[in-house]
Image 1 (cartoon, rainbow, N blue to C red):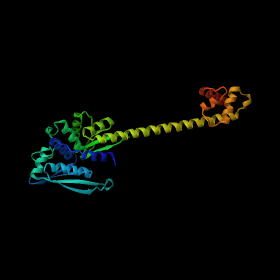
Image 2 (tube, rainbow, N blue to C red; image 1 turned 90 degrees about the vertical axis):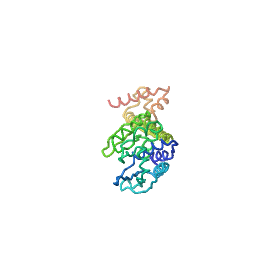
Image 3 (cartoon, rainbow, N blue to C red; image 1 turned 180 degrees about the vertical axis):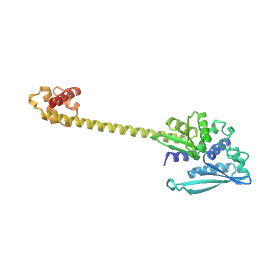
Image 4 (cartoon, rainbow, N blue to C red; image 1 turned 45 degrees about the horizontal axis):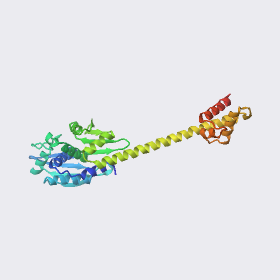
Length: 302
């Protein structure tokens, strides 16, 4: 299961107690994933297009809490591996229209709003609920190697509004215009964790941080393994060069210390410099063994 799925499932299980929070969450859902259809004669129909059954059930429960009837339908996308999507259809009856107006989704004249009025997100708890609704409706989370969280909006104005809400909760988000839609996004682990915490996704914060730690540990282990391999390659190449040099020389004509290290290299071709140095009599330092072998290589080139 992806981080986005984990996040949606956790957020869908949060049931805010205050009516203002439920209204703000409903507002975030409809602004992120809702579409308004004008039927004429002053009638509208609204539907949500959602990524998971858990989110669809959450939206259904929110609407029912306000006395609004809705219907869940499914369809398969033609692209993206024909994944199943969930649509929540709301007939635009007078009561439903009134609730959506209170949530800042529709104006009194039944026109869709790009952003809700300030009264919907005036309090910190309401801002958190709105962000939760936006994450449920059109949020995505990936990581930990390249952590990225984004909230999709229909317009640049909507994305800037989301960034403003997050900033009010001390979470910095950037905004980008993608042409057909816009996004408010965060790439740093700290900003992502801050937004998840603001939306109430404490478990997702822990999962994200755990995966980030595991990813960092795995990357460190790979770096160490690569470094060890590179050291082994360098040591092996140096030892081969030393062996070739020693075999070209007449060992009997060499000074005692050079003759000793040459003889040790011939008898122990795979030992490291430190191990060769310890076999000298008396034992030498690693740097001394290295200098002596380098001198043998230079002599062989003459």
